[in-house]
Image 1 (tube, each protein chain N blue to C red):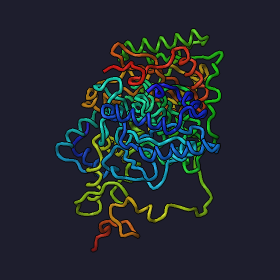
Image 2: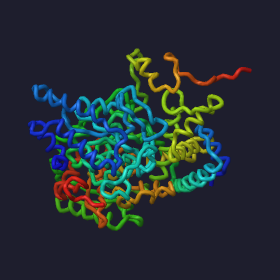
Image 3: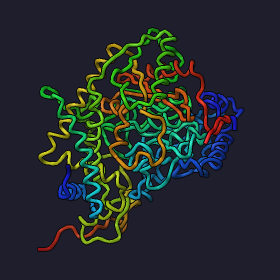
Image 4: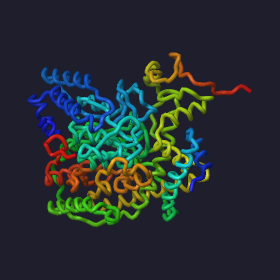
Length: 96
Length: 491
């Protein structure tokens, strides 16, 4: 079962706000899923390697040469706030 | 309206010998949209003027004797999580409600090269998270066979569009069954390729080790033609396999002599609707009558597949959706106190509940102290699930199974309890974990006139075998009914 604090913690990790009403609802729903996945406790995986994905590839690189990328105007076209050069965001670093 | 009852191959033939023009076909599809879309709600964007212009251009080039692409003149709908340059791509989310991609997905470019006519973008569950399209924040899609029932999900719009005659072809994406299940609910063909077969470049990511784009069509050969047009290596997707495009349409008519069809012991348990079970067993009998050997097999770890899937998919989703922070694109909240608060406010306003649930579940499964017990454990059980299939495909060529425990459920029936919705993924979900290809083909209707699908699964990279086996059944079973096209509709 998930506590209110657990929900607030994962909401924080996921950069989400949850209202008081939502905390309770999510605690129940997420708790239900987490209880369900406990079924995996039955499985002995002592000599099993994890399988992160199905494709038999790893570390797929390309040559380190510059290639044409998105033009600036296209990259900024969906920006919520821009001065035409940069994405504008609130102050990041707080002054001491 | 009869051209909308034609198969993809018949349409290509008529377009090729110019007894039908691309403009005429596009207009017929637009007329079907005008007539039935108010009820079906499959599309978030209708690309009317551009589609007609594109079609006119194709007709001109064909008239002038210039070469045209393999799908020239065929209208197609793309699920709205596939990027189309200059055309809104929303993922059915308030987060991307006004997002216009600055580039085309790989599959979008391939379809343009093939001269398919982009007629619209289809509704989906938000960010492809769901099994009914009820999680869309931007529209409601109903099952073309019955307005009170779901079209399935997450590619509900893509499936409903093809069933309704809005286009002969569409693309969806499948992470846990999101092509195959809506195909079965809407009575059309839907295929999930082998992982890595179709480039994910330009597919908005949900779970990167599971997502695959795949075709919908009204017939098996149509799905084969579309798969051939979009598959093959793409350097921009680092998980794209180094293989050329498939050539499944060239062999799809060849039956498989000595076909071994596996039937999974664990699939026929409680919870499976009696009419679905009967339809699947009748389908297996069809294969037997065609000379196939039926082999009972076991997939012992199938009972763990849903738990494994939701841990892996949600973990990957929590990472993939971290990019939606109101900085570069997407929704930015109007009010916030600082940078982090901007992220929280933007994300909370932009995402629906199911998306939030999956992000939180993923964050939990990956967090310190829980990573080994949840995420890492799930990756290990995933390997056991894959091993089960590898062993099975030593004994059989394809596996036949239900697609969903029931036909299309009623809208609102499954939404109260997220877990209940998740548990219905039992037949489709393992294929994504293992990375193997799967197809859903129409296999009859139930007594309430709702479609039932048959799923076939094959070993990795065996799409040609999969499609040939599917065609064997389709040839015997006959063409599937269509809801609005041939007078066989019901409400």
